[in-house]
Length: 190
Image 1 (cartoon, rainbow, N blue to C red):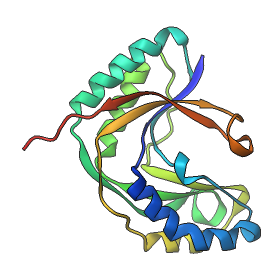
Image 2 (tube, one colour):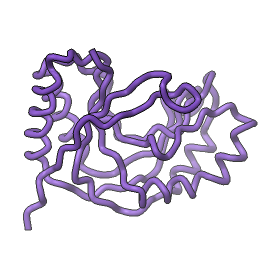
Image 3 (cartoon, helix red, strand yellow):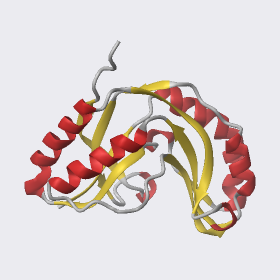
Image 4 (tube, rainbow, N blue to C red):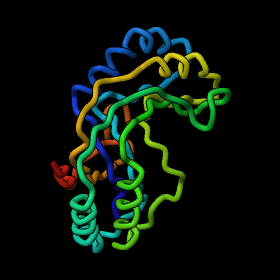
């Protein structure tokens, strides 16, 4: 059994721009607000999360995800705005929003995973990059207002990745991510 997720990973141009936007503000908040900031190298949009993928299902999962990706044309995306889970007044997670045609891709990835025998997390899909986690709920309204002013560069979402996640094996005992497969989206017509 493996812990895995299907993701769209923004390119360096998008993550570097957002990282630069946040850098001064993040450094000021690090010691004051108790945020545990995610590293820019690990930013990704989770389309489908599976806590346990049976080893016997992996090949079928990759095949089904490849077929799903091939049916979805590449599209323009960008990081824009932000928010907090569960809400800004008592946030446990601060996130940046994503603009693009991610809903249908998420539905397809979730269906492919479920059909292959993996149990898919059923939480409501909201396209986002997790920027920080908080040890205890806090008001992050000013961070959400700050993110509302952010609009990053446009980029082409042209592939999805199947990623294995190993809890506690990364730097500072964070998850270590390993890309198992990269699956191209269809070329847009025209």
